[in-house]
Image (cartoon, rainbow, N blue to C red; front, top):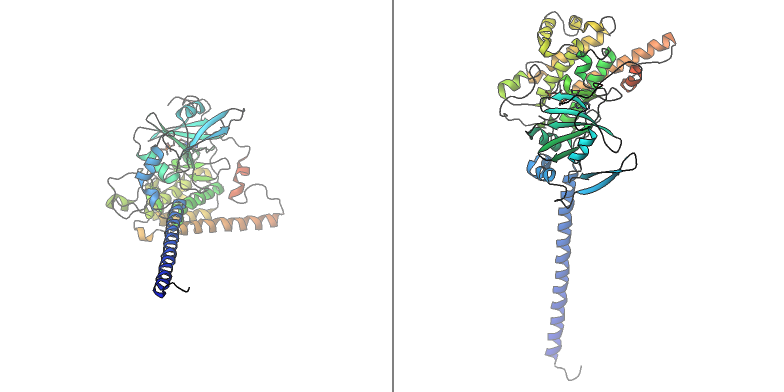
Amino acid sequence: MKGIPLILIIGIAIGVLVGSMSAIVGVLWVMLRRRRSQVGNSSSRRAAELPISGNAVDSSTVLSDITESPRSSEENREISVMKCGGGHMKKSLSKSGLPKYSYKDLQKATFNFTAKIGQGAFGCVYKAQLLTGETVAVKVLATNSREFLSEVLLLGRLHHKNLVNLVGYCLEKDQHILVYEYMSNGSLSSHLYGDQHEPLDWDMRVCVALDVARGLEYLHDEIIPPVVHRDIKSSNILLDRSFRARVADFGMSMVALRRPLSGIQGTYGYLDPHYISTQIFTKESDVYSFGVLLFELIAARSPQQGLMELVKLGAMSTEERLGWEDIMDPRLDGKSNMQELNEMAALAHRCINESQLQRPSMREVVLSLSQILESKKHQKKNHLRQSNTKLTSFDNCASISDHYKGKSFTGIPKSPEVC
Ligand SMILES: Nc1ncnc2c1ncn2[C@@H]1O[C@H](COP(=O)(O)OP(=O)(O)OP(=O)(O)O)[C@@H](O)[C@H]1O
């Protein structure tokens, strides 16, 4: 170092120090930025994974998702599905994860829309055989697309064994089409009122009530934000191949809000008087409609056939849990358990209480109906133990399909009709 002035050495040392410090600060800054952007990505991913979240009701986002044509969306993936006979059918997955079907494929699957199985206020329903071999129900909605949006936005993200699941949709050529799981045993109303089926026995009616209650409990208490169905009635309850009941038709469903809606919508006879007077539809309004449905199961009479007048008369001569047998479906005479019938009617009566505060929640309803079924199972077991016979028919809800095996149920018309 001899010959180099001290001042130069000090200057070089300071320069090296400052340089390495700024390099360290730079590296730290880059690392911090990377970390921040990772946190941001993971939280947005988490939000998208929620079954129902705030963004589930952001119609603009989902609308752009579902209205995008398969070709224009890079994120839509066309997947090829093997057909039974070896051929292929194409369906694309939208960003929401719901398969998008082409109009042409649905046209083929429904035999050019001739296999009609039902008609609702919003359009016709057809039975369809997809090329995959899967049987589905296809609902072609009238031009108004509000119900279409509501179903795709909500039902596409709801999954429960007591709801009729949406398995796809088609939005093409001004057509709004929804594709559902096929419910081979038709609607509850067709079993209560139609003459093409044997009347449902009492055990079956209790199971249907519990299944529907569980579906509603899921909507009200198990998803965030909670959803109200807004059209609970026997024609919107469908029975699958094992006779398990599922809640259908989410065309009017929405996230529960405690503010007035514009206009009154729903079905006469099932509407909560509180909703009619305030225009605010709450979970308790669904509970009211469910109470009407319970009375329908007991009396096999619809509100249009004077059900609620009958209930009012019945209520006059009852004492809480006694005396409801006067309103019972005459076809159940001698074939139902009077204690259970009275308990179910008392529960139904609480559901239709004028005051929303006095109505039970769907969680309480599920509990009460489960207790009825539990005591039924107990009685059955005791009875079987005493009579030493083998369990052959009804044990619990799961064995319903066995119970009805061999009996004639024709859920759909045999010959296709034109809508
Ligand atoms: N997923 C399905 N599987 C089998 N049948 C179905 C299915 N969805 C609907 N149906 C049949 O189509 C009928 C009409 O259903 P839709 O939901 O369109 O109207 P609705 O509930 O009867 O009446 P509204 O539209 O006035 O509420 C049902 O009663 C049922 O028989």
